[in-house]
Image 1 (tube, rainbow, N blue to C red):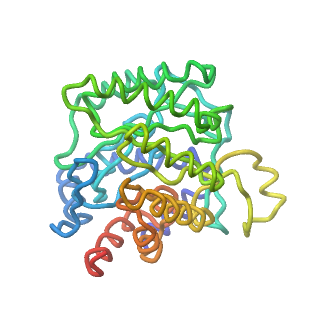
Image 2 (cartoon, rainbow, N blue to C red):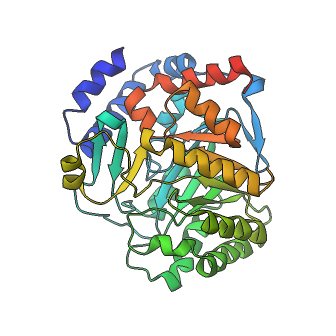
Length: 346
């Protein structure tokens, strides 16, 4: 109940401002003597049956934080106290990028959803590396979500991804290639067969030159049709990627309860949260069937309850990620979902 009181106050502020304030408050709370240890204990759900071995990595539990929440790797240590098994930071680009003009993050409370057009705003990969060098909490898996600059032409996009890969390689446990955000002009065109295969082959070549290659995953859009998803499956298998993240935000506005006038006022951006749940599950189920379960899938999109987690895992996801659900349901959500997974043997 306490969080829902806090949420009412935060929701009085613009969404992006509220996010930064909430993280500063959480970090401040954790800086108090003994508080980090106490809250880590309170939110922790630890049991051998929650552990997962995926991509050759040991995850202490199957619930992670999706990319976008901690774009610059500023807060992953503080967020780990909520009980996540893994946290994905980014999307990061080689150089700092301001992103799109504000406002660029909007709440749709009637739909338990968000619309964002952030535009890969971040401080650049070098700043992220500096923070990662300070170490990470024991047992926490860190994923690095990498992208390209807004002004980098698609035919040279592989260079941006390669820079981020090389600089992050010593510090993250796995990589995610983000070609599915709707907020960088032309980015989604990289999901087409030829440019995508070229990009992934280049990254896999760099990976193969390392003494210990790391898992590379592809994050895809929910708006791809079945034929496009077939191409994705073929490319993932041909390039021997470790897995797929399904899905990113959607450009669809179908079935929303929020008034149409408000939707038009907000304008462009990717929709996340409850309205995305069904489509992301459809995509997970299709990919799982087409790959015969041989390619691990991280399911993300509209997870905010026990039923949402069950739906994703039964559709074929091996791991799941949260973002919007955490904003609407608050810090206790991870603990609730982990206890449910443990009690139901999911």
